[in-house]
Amino acid sequence: MEITFNGKPREIQAGISLQEFLDQMKLDCMQVVVEHNNNIIPRQRLAETVMQTGDTLEVIHFVGGG
Amino acid sequence: MDELIIAGRSFASRLMVGTGKFASNEAMVASMEGSGSEIVTVALRRVDVDNPQDSLLRHINPERYLLLPNTSGARDAEEAIRLARIARAAGCEPWVKLEVTPDPYYLLPDPIETLKAAEVLVKEGFIVLPYINADPVLAKHLQEVGTATVMPLGSPIGTNKGVRNRDNIAIIIEQACVPVVVDAGLGAPSHAAEAMEMGADAVLVNTALAVSRDPGAMGVAFKKGVEAGREAYLAGLGKQQDRAEASSPLTGFLGK
Image 1 (cartoon, helix red, strand yellow):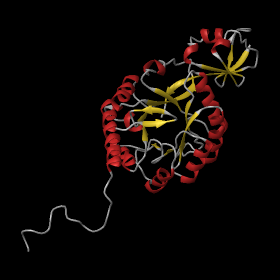
Image 2 (cartoon, rainbow over the protein chains, first blue to last red; image 1 turned 120 degrees about the vertical axis):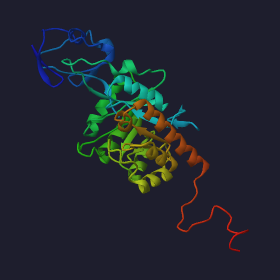
Image 3 (cartoon, chains in turn purple, orange; image 1 turned 90 degrees about the horizontal axis):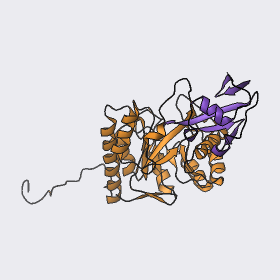
Image 4 (cartoon, chains in turn cyan, green; image 1 turned 90 degrees about the vertical axis):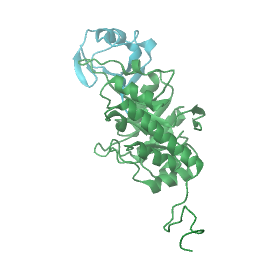
């Protein structure tokens, strides 16, 4: 199924949770914040939140800035 | 040096530093350490899974530094509020450097959107440090909605031009009930000293450190500039005047 991940279309396995997606992308959930369909998902809810076709996902982290 | 107090929290250093544009994380850390800073700014961006990077946070000791996330990249109040909430969800303390810069050429802050975002974020319990143009009336409005500081720019971000709007910054300092942090454009320790001599409570520096040949040493240099400026302000600077006034006695020997 297709979702939009960080602004770009991406094909992912159907029925996976946000936590599983992060694991597949090799992203440490402690180092990122996930916005799922414009809602910030607390870390403890990543495993229970399952993605649907057409979802929008933003995965944000800290970078250098002034 | 006397302590800086923002929102009830004390800091020994009056120099805040940014973490952008450094050639390496090692250079960034050297600069932070040299500067003696206790507040460091960071930005939020999408992760790039095609080019995985070392996590920035692994290099910043949370015991030693207060992380001050900025809302850089936000073009309006809504985007800035969204970024602030993301920063808080990341586990940061609810401090935010509020930045709304719709114009990518000069990166000047949008006063109307900044005020709107500040009002919302203060109500949500954030400690808001807004980046503004040196507009004394805007500074007053922001204090009225409850911001913890005001952060007028000296000159546009990254220009290294120093304090180009002295008169307006002086008015902001004169009228402020919260700390005034001169942010942006400070390119040399003398610029930082100038802002501090004027009575600014703190300064924020990034580009001047990041682009220097030796960011660690430049951090030390800025630390000295800030301390010199603060101490001179507290000691009381002499007034400027047009006519010369001899430092040595004019009477007592020659030409009598």
